[in-house]
Image 1 (cartoon, one colour):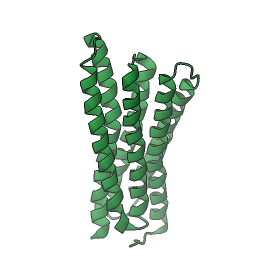
Image 2 (cartoon, helix red, strand yellow):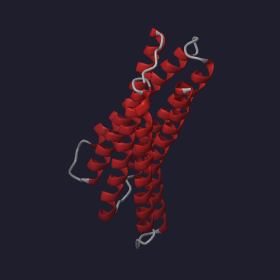
Image 3 (tube, one colour):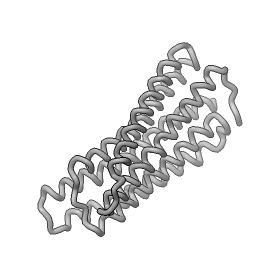
Image 4 (tube, one colour):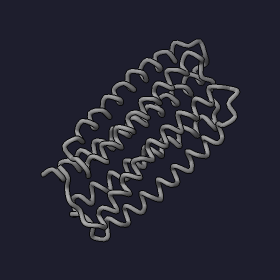
Length: 215
């Protein structure tokens, strides 16, 4: 089922899709950043770091544009508030990607070899969750009947990440390293996991919007 919108509303919907795609761009770039960091010979780390900052800035600009537009009388008032919340939720995903990149760039944590693959696994879940979320946003205004499938996909990837995160945290506290080093690694792993948590939070808001459109 496809829902009709006024021209100006369709323009906002297009911006919302553009904003949601920044989550895939940010998570994918962050994964490349980590992959580079874990390979000592990689010289592209700073380029990836700058790319993440650029993506975050671009997402902020899109978010501000959407919020400015919707309060010019577009959409029904209750939908307007949910769209506002959704844009903020999407922005938080990209912001978290930037904050995780800063942890690595500023602190240079020493990650044991056997944990690197697991952290990359966390990031793979983040990318996959973002991809499912973007599809859900696009389907919301294109084929509303298919949205729930992709919302469930986001939840599945969030669960998969939780399993990896718990395993990594257990591994960290079994290592023969200082408590300070354990806490540093714990902070990194939890913050990586927060990316997927925020994607699920945004997906929950999307479900509210789905209900308002469907009924």
